[in-house]
Amino acid sequence: MLIPAADAPQYDSEAEVRFAEGWPEFIFHDAASSQWSSRRTEYFPEWEFYFTADDHLAAGCWGVPLAWDGTVDDLPGGYTDSLARSVTSYETGVVPNTFVLMAAAVLPDFRGTAAALITAVRDRAVAAGLGQVIAPLRPTWKPRYPLTPIEAYATWTRPDGLPLDPWLRTHTRLGATILTPAPTSQTITASVADWETWTKMSFPATGPYVIPAGLSVLHIDRSTNTGTYTEPNIWVRHA
Image (cartoon, rainbow, N blue to C red):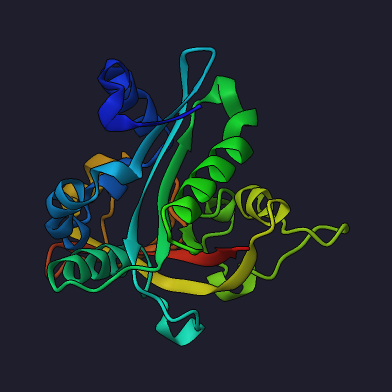
């Protein structure tokens, strides 16, 4: 059952801990996205959900409404740009026509609920007048191939023609179409020390590094004491 998070505070503590387990620590330190986050939660509380199975917390997701003309050229740049567009559009009175599913998390014991979660939130969006549903997906298996450009990875399929990536495959089985890669969906820049803490690695020299759970490589610059990671996603559109 899909429940607005605001109506089910009994799940808040569990969700805060359990949903974070499936994401790398560095993803929570995106300063560019953080500047929009507080306004997002203020403006769109109705677009954050828990999904339950037999009264147990099984999954959760959230998204934002925005205006999109339906073309690839008008797509937001990715995750961060979607946040920015939704907030600034709301503040300037732009009427949204599109729901962007920004993030979803499914607890390990309830993997089978992913399709039901996506279907439920998609139907909720359409019922609310947001007739277009899109998502900048974080491909599940991309960390296995961090050196492969996202443009190539998005085209990889199994012998049956479905996407190789399990998360992309889940969405396409529900009728979604792959639109285009979002090669710069998020950019996270921090000190070398921060990156060493988050990844539990050492970065003794300037250069690119493969990091745990990274969809691309981390670029370390010892001369400026910075590490920069650019997260690629893949845009899909649900029918």
